[in-house]
Image (cartoon, rainbow over all chains, first blue to last red; front, side, top):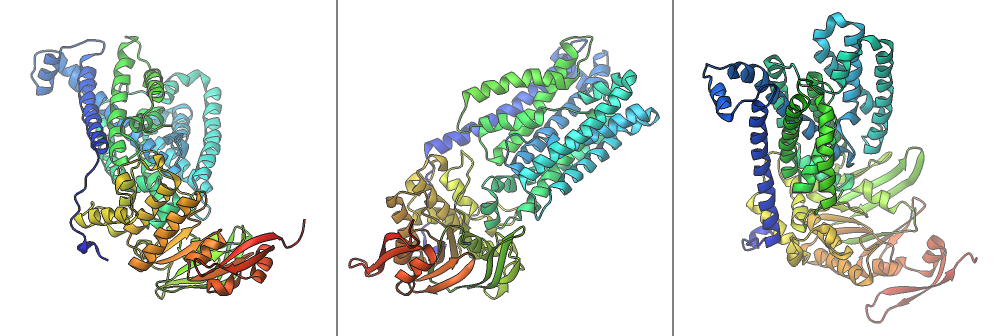
Length: 347
Length: 261
């Protein structure tokens, strides 16, 4: 009984499956279009607004207006950062949800955010002379906290529940440290608050150049995790049966997720919400197959952060709000709407 | 094909199975039977390398199963746990496709051969009409068949099933058992099952292995194993064992508890 004996079977996928594929592709294209539109809008709006024509001229490098300076030096790097950070955090959250098989998993669970915060806040408050090293310290702090969580969770393999519990405990511990420092140095808290709520304001090409290579590497590795993420959704026993080393896979996916979150937090500070909510929104739109869900998550994460950052600098202009606050205001209701509407996938 | 010797298996400090030998020969159907908590499922997990034993070795075709690459093992055996999880929107065909995973490198995509084997597995389990339905919308029996189809797509020589009929009504139970029996006869797949229903175990398997409190009790043909004495000793049940005229195999009818109430 071998496959060769079978006539080449015509696979007649039902209309429903074709329709689903069509919908998935439409959502994917739609997400790309949405990102492009919001990206252009983010270049247009700010304390001064420009027409799309002026933006195109500025991007082409045509001199003659101050549009070029503002767009090229301020808004474009900011937009690129928002795209990278948004995509990183969304992928990170999606991978962790596969690792934990838990819809409440988000990048913060690995300890990355609180570890980075404590390190960054320590530098900003206790050693203000070293402020240039905040991104580096935040990244290292995030990594150490993540390692701490995973070494606590390790017991003949990695069990999702243990990671979640260890994550909660480590987060409480490190979060307490951050709070303590904030109280002790309450007179210098202003800059820290901006960082803790995540802000892309004042970031420049310098930050883009630092983040870009790591982001590209992280996103590529993340996309390579698609198959493994899918198999983990079938449960540990089924995954092991299919020849997956489940504990290895969990650690690899977690490290990738922590790396993506770590580089993002190090560059722009804490931005919550994207990593938790965007994978859900993607799931509601395209289902739980990571082949579609992960790329759509990346696109929507980027879009959401671009929108939120644009709003952060325009809504209460000239006051700039931390982008994290706006994101919750935008994304929360939209997420609730999708949740109520439902679909094949239900949370 | 598989030879396990002197297995000692436990979780943390609790030893569940001790000094257990187990041999699986090519082409047979074995039923592993015993009371609740006797360690049947645990033995199956160790034999299929899903779990490590504290002591003892499992040989697959003469090699230590934990030394072999887990992917290579996945091409030779497939194990279905008692309960499966599927994401809510995986179709039968998508699930079955995962069975081809051990045959691919991580960078490869589905080949024509993979597609053919997936359709073949769907055909073997008679799921053609349901291939594009979501697993979670199927009945328990259909779901079980979908998972068996996934296992078949691995093209295993050995199929290990942990209580494949629990939670199913009698019609779906028979459907699954007939399917397993046909796979054994027509494709020569060796089958090891943990079963609770002794009459089913007797009817569909060539050899029974009895385990109680983690220790080997008896093994042999259904006729030799299913006896009044065994039922009393292992299950604490007084029963009548007769040879059924229709199937020519022993069946038992429980009469009462052996220890009184």
